[in-house]
Amino acid sequence: MLAWIRRLLAILVTILAIIVAIPLAGLGYGYLTTEPVTVAPPAPASDSAARISARLGSEIAGYKRPEVSTFLTYPEWAIVYAAREYAGLVADASPRAFPYWAYIGRFWRDYALMVRATADYGFNVQNHLMLMVIGISHTVEHAVQWSYENTVGWLTELTAMFQPVPEDTYQTAVSAEYAAFLDQVPWYRFPYGEKRAGLWDTGPASGFAAIRSWERKLGFGLAYSIKQGYADLIKSGLDATSEAAHLDIHVWAQGAVAAAIAGEPDTELVEEIGADGAVFVTRRYQVFTDMIPRLIERGMRFVEIGGNRIIFLTLTADEEIAAPEGTQAVFDYALPADRSMRRIGLIVPVGELHTALPELTRAGAVLEHVYDY
Image 1 (cartoon, rainbow, N blue to C red):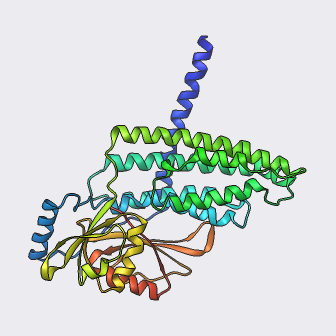
Image 2: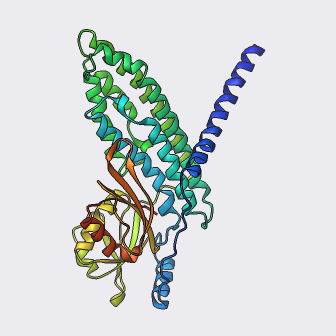
Image 3: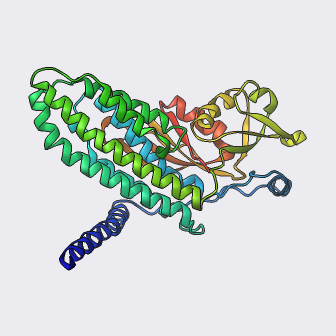
């Protein structure tokens, strides 16, 4: 009995050591492979604008959000992009071809860059705790899947003559669904149990390829079970210790604001400020990102988003693109799963969005996301 307890303690200590080692090694790698980021403050608001901003912050619940969040929400989205790029690759290639280790390294580099960018802000324990949990999960999941796909997965691909079986097709569809789901909803709310049932209901291939079918059912069925259990644990922990996420964002803008937002879903005018514009509220996340270019085309000029005057955003392009004047480049790298495409991260004054985004679009960039406060 004593020997069994010792073995159990040794296993627990080993697991704990791995959990501690992953972020230490990850952030160490991130710091060694990135450059310092010094965030240039935006131009000071006029006395009148500062008074309006202070009044809005005091009178409108949820108007002002922590500025640090525009940076610290980005690593969460790096996980979304990894899922999206995985889905894009496996639609035409074997899961073995995905650069799992490159995406592990990319997360920790992105996180290190955001830590650098927020050095002058207060330390947000809740944000960093969540990012540590996400980073550890991302690292373990990708390392395990790389190992699995290049051993068991390779052998069962051989039995199927390296042709996809129905379960591969199902998994490809689920990967695409998962990537789209993450645009607006946290990963831990994805119905993994439902997808496990769908995988098991998929009719297996015939002949030797049936080995591949059953390996996918057993291996990924187990993975779905583990993810569902982990997701339930995360949800329970967040429900017990955190407030529900605020899903709305308040925007102070100038121009014909009421006309510009007319017809936009989940969007309403909050207050007219006469010659100084108006405040409206809308949904956060990808729906707001998609809305911004439309509002700019309708003549809107942003003053504050989430009560702040700088914002971090990313774009994709098929070549390097110069940062517009007044913006600040944080990174520009080729996507690990598609080296023909690049991701560009910029810090942009909110008041320059109406000029910077059209300039970037003319240069061939596509707005990916505006983060997220």
